Length: 392
Image (cartoon, rainbow, N blue to C red):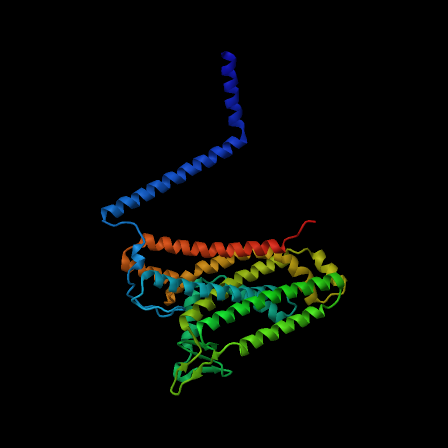
């Protein structure tokens, strides 16, 4: 008996010294704390709602919204239900996110690469842009673009005409657009497919140049043909409505991008691209100097060194933090309510003010941003796997 007791004591001491035991114990304790806190808050919420005679539920989304929305990508009327109003806000948010990611990437990569330029003007412009924009709050930049830039454009009677195909005034920007929603979706889909094909052709050309030392002329010809096909499809295969000026002021036809939308998009792009530029600069700097020197020793020009040797290696460092910046851009779209753009947060705020359902509305809001960010993460993780070194 004494021996059994000693063995049990020994086993207990051994277990307490076992690192695996403490890892499991810590997780169990953490889970218990989380469950206890969740139970407390849910119970408190349930008691308060019962005291006020309210029942948790989402049936209110079927009720008539009763408020108008100034800008909508889908058809909406004030007598539509709340879920339709929230869908309008979601579509406006997605339009900001999609356009913002594309423009942010283009501007950020350009500014990041320009910081290595031997051209004094390009270098100074890049560094000044990053240093200035990163240190000014985004909300202040939103107000700057809305009031000081687009708010200072002339009124419709004195609007600015750009090449006869676009107009600018203090009500917004007017550009050519497809004559129907179906054709617009087709044009967007064709552009996305053409862009993906162009990226693959360009990567194929780089691979051919590296492996064979040739100029990749066939791939260039394929890129040119792809561009011609894309332009031909958009110009001949789609019926466009062109904006035309009206005598006395105003514009008819085309697509109107409201002053609120272009101000929000401009602020988000210029702000986020400054951080992307720093990510690109850091990624390029992470490539060892030996790679630069070896490429120059082979007689490659500076542009070829960046394109064929440095940037492909830098992508392995650039892409992971870019995911965070894209998610930051997505979440920062909620600030557009400050300049009256009807994005998801703005519409949700109006909804809970009218319904008195803040818990349900904010749960919908949280789930929406979470799903968008998770989708961005899914795409970026897949892209990250494609640029990593492959072991043979």
